[in-house]
Image 1 (cartoon, one colour):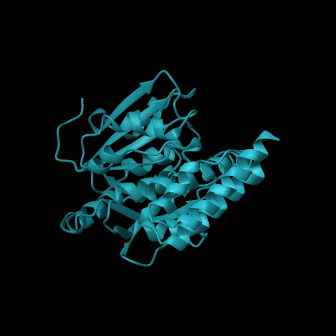
Image 2: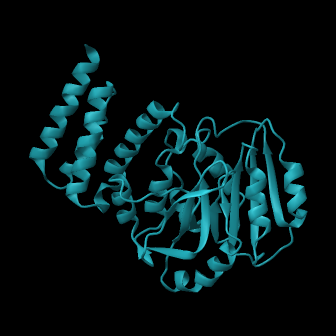
Image 3: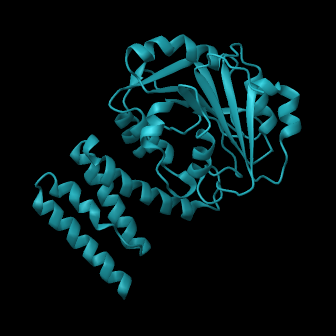
Length: 306
């Protein structure tokens, strides 16, 4: 039975792989501030995690959901969302089942909460490390600024100037309920679009006094070479959504670059292109650019029929 508290933070763990799960749970149990609630969703895993959970957590500290059907294999965002339906706290973090948080993570969240509330900020990003199978850090991601816009994060990541993932973010729950996650295969880019939509028009607060460690290794989606083509296809769906739904939030030059990359990928991979991208230009009365994009889509469709 979960004790009723005034917790503001939910830590959500979509569980499937047991390999590093004990390290994840241990990092949560080691928090210096215990004012948070844990939600663990077992996505029909072949490995029962309950003994690990029971070793580190008391029953009143967490909710555990065991699902009969595997949604993560179809789309990770669907698994995230069915766990999030149970969250009552004002803020939430989705922590990978092989990622960890520093022992002061929750403490630093509360330390910066007043600043977030006073600025009507909807997203907080923490300093994050990439770690390998041995839990050794091999890259540190420090944005070197207290505030950063979601648009800047997406642009810099698009040009490989910075990295970003899901686990190091804490989002305001009300913003998730308003927008929800974009459904992209492998959720490849869903986290980036979540940063964009869940932050609203406000900057993101960057906290460097606590750390999230993201595990990158061959069996993870991020580190998998076997899924390279699937990730490439998913990333082009991400581009499509970025143009159609979020293009208005970026400078025209950036959207034109994304559009060019999107259409090139469709052409060379012999995949259909969504004609709705033309509306980005039509809404701006840029008829010549709309015509050029339309002509390229026509050639792609003609190529598919050959």
